[in-house]
Length: 339
Ligand SMILES: C[S@@+](CC[C@H](N)C(=O)[O-])C[C@H]1O[C@@H](n2cnc3c(N)ncnc32)[C@H](O)[C@@H]1O
Image 1 (cartoon, rainbow, N blue to C red):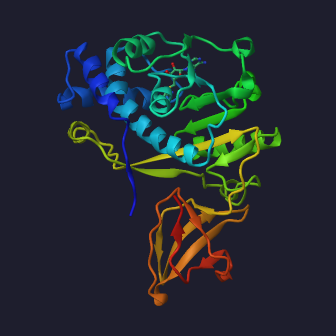
Image 2 (spheres, rainbow, N blue to C red):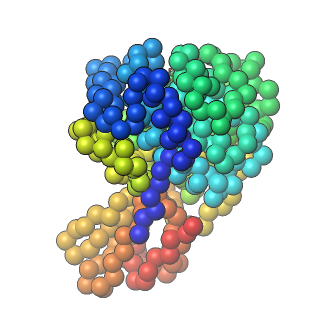
Image 3 (cartoon, protein in one colour):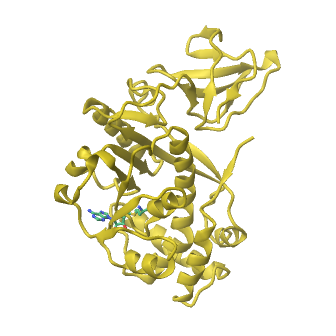
């Protein structure tokens, strides 16, 4: 059984209020979908283009579609980070390329950090200050540099869908104790993130999640095509489903690629992480797992009568005595999923 995720409930009334300023409601499915299509077409035509925040259709699309989707992904990610104790000792968050403060809003539901938002466009700040009054930012800045960094040892630099145009994190971020990097789960962005993970490890950071170890990533070093990504089941509200009926893209599950890094050494994880969906093959089912630089699969041979589908992205307790044949760990008992 998988767990379903959504965006924090407090967002809905804020989105509803913000849409009123465009004479829209969440029930105006067709009009909302038209804006979503306009923004997706814009990014298809200009993959490296800046979000056109000055356009009302872009603001509407972000409010009704991209904010709920990204916040749902981030909700799952914050849960994973909390389970690892990742935020311990963190007091400041620099949300770079904050847009509608998606990541800070989601984090602020559970944590009382001082949020420093960096966003080159003005429109998102206006929308957030007017309609998301439950959220209080320490400051909004158009740019950020080393001189702005006051307490790097207690600071998390957060890049939520804002690294795509950069080949590396900015210099000041290397001074920060913690890094949260979230990227679209495409092959190109996902592999770029794995490259950056290795670079950060070489510079002294440790990977806290999703990685279970600090060695080479098997998806990156043992394959030219794979990239690490998680899958989140989206419990969409009815207004979202109605809007989606008008769209060619469906979002019952959402994928995301992320890494959580800190200078503080990561607590040892004795578990393995499931990094693949279940693949049904002749005579067996397989799911990829990660616990070392080796590319390995759990394998359920059909003749054993054992069957299990483990949600992608979770940690599992691997029995020590599973027989290994080539790159397959042959399952002979139920695998325990960890919380
Ligand atoms: C794809 S949006 C992501 C928004 C948000 N972080 C999220 O997760 O939904 C990227 C945002 O980064 C902003 N941005 C891009 N480059 C920037 C820069 N160099 N300085 C400040 N903001 C930047 C853009 O204006 C845009 O709002």
